[in-house]
Image (tube, rainbow over all chains, first blue to last red):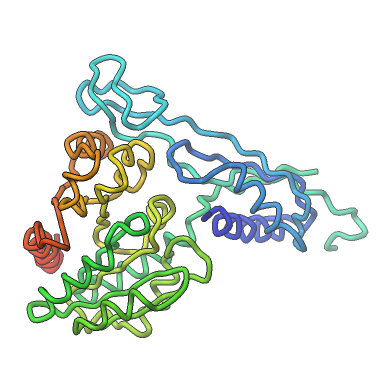
Length: 122
Length: 221
């Protein structure tokens, strides 16, 4: 449900960034989304599509790259990908671990249309 | 077409607002607790009992977040503490800007301890820093022992887990040891208090914990 709030934060950042780079239309926005976040990618895609309406990113495609959950075992220090944050360490069997990756909610790059020279700032 | 680098944490605006709140709480010497749980876990009832016990010992204030209605604030306010209601207008969590706005009505300098009762939701509130000192959560035994594994983030972020409604344990299939083991696999430092607002079990331990955290904050921990 908080995907709407997150999409609103995203569109603010997208519009501001596009404005600083000539103000062209934004075609693609790319982001990292960690597995441990409570954000549902489908809901976020829908909320972002709605948030883009009437902005320079209307119709923009959102490309979400999922970041796997990576834990460091608190007993033996083994680092690796896990399905769930309570899963046992494959080396020593201790459950859980410190989260190294998987909390990301991060915009990375945009594809922005180049303005025609006539429209550009002289 | 040009590829433009943006590299920005989406919640960075919230994090900045939270940092400003945190600075304000520290300057005022006010300890702030973000209390979270799923809907119906017993946050409001616990705060009613807390207000009765602490109102003569500490200057206690409560900021209540709800999607709609002022019922929770009315309930807590009857127990002699100052309460301010924040309606999120559909939002499923409080964010740092909503708390900053509430501080217009609840000056931190007027309180020793400020408890923020978050919107009832086991998912979203854990994602948003409010500038609090600590997060605490209630897991009531009627919700099921599988919740830490299914909704890990809140258990990961909390300093204290209150195991609520333990008076109902004889009537429900809830394995407290399993729930605590899962929660501590996520967060080994998690403190746990078994609680029943109905029988009073655990209420002294809870208020002692709260006062202890306030005193630790005052000594600059």
